[in-house]
Length: 297
Image (cartoon, rainbow, N blue to C red; front, side, top):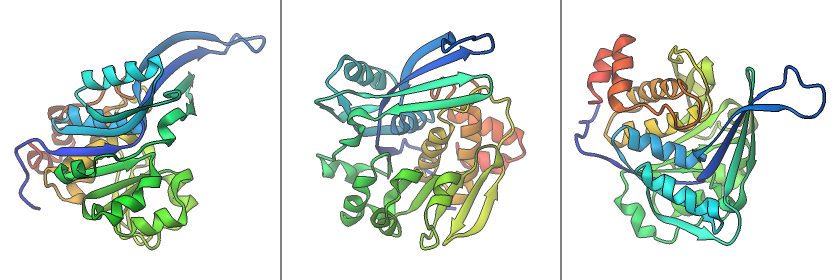
């Protein structure tokens, strides 16, 4: 393993920032289409913003490149992101509505309705900014992957892909990036046999590392008493970026990210339980990974 840094790494994260509107419903006694909401909360969210918040919670610096609308929600999102310690100078305000994710929790079921709004209109205005980053993570902005590769960012680029994002052109460009992170649905939806390094998250079933379609490593999920798994994949991505940015190798980083994601599920909401570096390393040591944990502090 290369020498782990003691200073704070900088991760630039490109993608969506959203208002998460979470409602918990009690539909047991409903006799018609009306369902009682027993709890609701509005919070900072979005795939990219969640990952950025996790980087910050671990002690890193996160700069977000994103878009918000010129509506009141957009101003609120910028304020909340700043309060979370995320750099927002490269978040532009566009004419339109900000992104909103409505998360409905019903017993053990979770449904997420996403109104993308201006999240589909993310641009990079300051390419020189990317030169200062130890690592660049792009999620929910697949239209920028080819440009990032063409500008030489590939060796420092992690691409988060979901099922709807993987066009043939994007997949071809991903052959030159450091790493691709996807979920099981994404891995099943497109051909990853040409990609040299793909991380497949499978929730409670663990995490796979695949090389040109062949599994070369498997990391079981960390056992915790999960309350809400919303945003766990984003927490995983943020922790993975942080660990790689400080110089940890991929094997250690995957175990670190898996533990981080598990701890993020201990409260309701995507960002309510984002763990600190100390909490993650303590959990890893508790599970017998003392040597790995020691390499991260």
